[in-house]
Length: 253
Ligand SMILES: Nc1ncnc2c1ncn2[C@@H]1O[C@H](COP(=O)(O)OP(=O)(O)OP(=O)(O)O)[C@@H](O)[C@H]1O
Image (cartoon, rainbow, N blue to C red; front, side, top):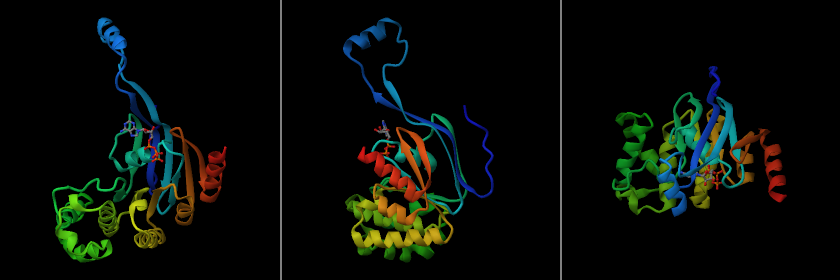
């Protein structure tokens, strides 16, 4: 059951009792299917599991949060619920201010359009006017290091080029809340360093950051708070170094 949400002015993200189910197995054996048909199609042929169960979390404006956990613990799912890419089966999510999500490389890009057209499309989706995008266009292209490829259809971009353009658009829209999932991994080292400088600038400017990464040293250097997920539940929430230590202890077991 979801608890009524009382969102204070200083809270950027509020998650209450989130549950997300996915299908574990779509089909059953022929025998099971026949029994299911003969018994009047009762029940569900597919088997479901909870990727997230009863997750509640408040993130204050200006907090920098690392979402940690082993593969499959539910980190990306939680980020997708916060960004609105996915809807929860139960529970509620509230965000305050403009949210920019760098969640899947290339998501939000229209593959048959050029980089230029995608800048305008994504800028508009993130709430910018054409005039605002015009004013920032050169700076977006420069930060992305895309150069003359800006007029190439993005379906011909490498995954690193996608990331560079998506990251550049997102930071230029000046979001209050910035969600970043693992994607920095596809950028080359110089660009990663540039992104980290930018992310630290955003944190220093009081933006809210919510970061998923398996690079524990990197997230511990960027974020102050750590949230540890295991099998879809929050098992620890505290100072990032303590949470990283706990994750490493569990990984070693
Ligand atoms: N669209 C989907 N359909 C079915 N199952 C899914 C879907 N998306 C995620 N899952 C499952 O939900 C669980 C949580 O996945 P999620 O991607 O959130 O984990 P994660 O912690 O981000 O993992 P990783 O560290 O490997 O990226 C996994 O078991 C995954 O297989």
